[in-house]
Length: 171
Image (spheres, one colour):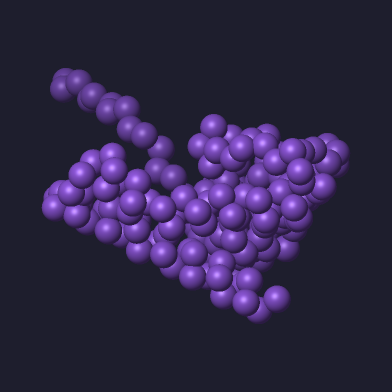
């Protein structure tokens, strides 16, 4: 008799959930399906002050799905006081991450509004002086080959600055 070999396979990730009950695709209740990231995005919009873990537990997705959704919508759902409410209901300050922009301390700042203005001034100054810095540091940097990813990144940065400028003008 021939041997049957069973292959070990990775489980397939189910990325769709029922919009009504939150069950992975296949509940057959008739409600439309939505992606897990869409469900996470809607939960962030409804409660941006909640932590990623709290939202993940609430809507039945992974913390990583919520983290990714929050990063992609950060400008829309920023939390004013930089705190989040955890699963236990306690409010905690968000830690500064290593990849956050490096900002010098503002000894003259008298609160978050002053610190924000200081931060905006520093970041805008960096963007304005970038070309001059590159010329001093690298010489004729405009002759360098430019990968398309860097062009895309520069365009995204320009759009982000334009959105910030538009928001500031509306005030």
